[in-house]
Image (cartoon, one colour):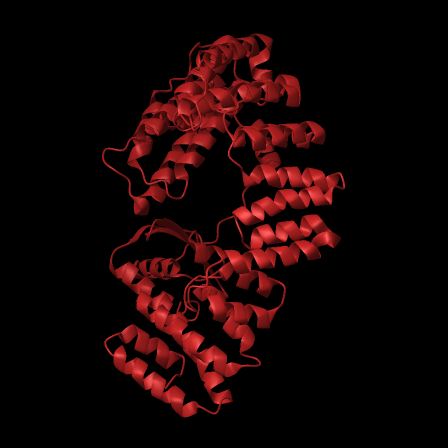
Amino acid sequence: MRKLADERSFERGERYFAAGRVRRVTVNGSTVTATVDGTRTYRVRLDVTPKGLSGRCSCPYGADGVFCKHCVAASLAWLEQGGEVGEPRPKPLSDKRLRLFLRGCDQAWLIDQLMTAAKSDGLLRARLAAAAGQENAFDDGDIRDRLERAVYIPDFVDYAEAYGYFMHVGEALDEVERLVGAGFADAAITLAEHALELLESSAERVDDSDGGLSEAIARAEEIHLAACEAGSSDPVELAERLVTRAVSSEYEVFLDVLPEYEKVLGSAGLARYRELVEQAWRKLPPKKPNDYSARRFVITHLMENLGESSGGADGLIEVLARDVTSAYDVLRIAERLCTDGRDDEALTWLERGLSDFEADFRLRDLAAKIHVRAGRRDQAGDMLWANFTDRPNLETFRALRQATAGGFPPWRERALAFLADALPATGSWSPGRSALVEILLDDDEIEAAWQAAVDGGCSDGLWLRLARTRAASHPADAIPILLRAADRAIEVRNRDSYQAAARLLAEAKVLFARCDRDGDFSDHMAAVRDAHRTKWALRQELDWAQLP
């Protein structure tokens, strides 16, 4: 273990083990598995071979092949239990050989074996009973109870517990999925819908920072579709449930069922689905600007899916055109037209959007692309110039350069003059002329960028870029910038910022040496260590960087 793990991982693994964070250590042949409670619950697998030990973990480091602290903790727990492994697992008998064996077995013995297995496997017993002609052979009570136990949250599941919580939810959904292949698809439909209800009802009591809820809902929806394809749901009733759940859901359940459910719904189900969605859409009040209600979004989205599935772009645009109250509404229509190669129609909509609503840079971007495709680069430049003056930065400058191509030089001179006039000169250490500096750097005009920063200021990050670029020819100019950046990093007061400060000071040390000022650097470091003598972590990072 000491050879596999670095020193820090080994120390942290020891602390995890001592704190009792390792659970469910299981030995299966030469494989050891365990769960370790860290920032979440992680799964560890250790493999013991004649060549030694190897470990895998579900944490990000373990996924990259690192023998992490969780692997260390699990290994220590296994060693505490004796460090024993079982015999290597035998190679499983092939299906072909097993079938040959069963064909030669006594019928009474086979019946006894099946009945014994059926006592502990309710699904197997239900399959046998259904094959014997029993109606409603499957009782979903056990799986329903398991779903409810897995999903129900009495209090709150925090971030550290969320991974384990959603793992148990996934195991319960596995049981539902098994029903589809076992011949009980209709039961799986009911249980998948019940699982979705449970997940929504518990959603606000679990930390979903890592998206576990969305994944669980998506999994339940996948099972539901597979069950519907294998089952015998009434298509009209299914359509009613799909629409009702979609409209009432706060988590976009069944929001995008088309075209996947079209075959399952058939003509009768699709007709009922359309009827209900259109009915809900007609009842929506006229849209007001900035109306982002969840109900309106869902109903409109369902209607858009219907429109596109039946009428393509024209069907979708017919729906979108009913409620055009913002530039974004226009953008969606224009984008869909462009997808179909209908640039002239898209441009007409974009012109309307720019006329009727507050200017939106996305409308100009798309209009510029259309003009470029048509060879109208000057008109593209007009559109993107407006974007640049509204949002003067490197991104809008590059867009202008790309669109105008060979005709860019006059636009460039105009843009630089605009920046020089529009951006305030507010002192060297203020953001001041950051946009101008960044653009000049992008054009490899280092001296001009430096002068713009000196005259009008720029952001700390740009000063650092400038310093590192200028250090090759003017090391004395770069020194104060690196020292200031190091001071700012120390002010953040954490281990990462101290490491950054040490790296910056090491860079400065090289520049001091090039200027024959080693003594000045030693004096500066003495002042730094004296001013921050209580910060032991900083001192440690400075020592590790071999700084005086």
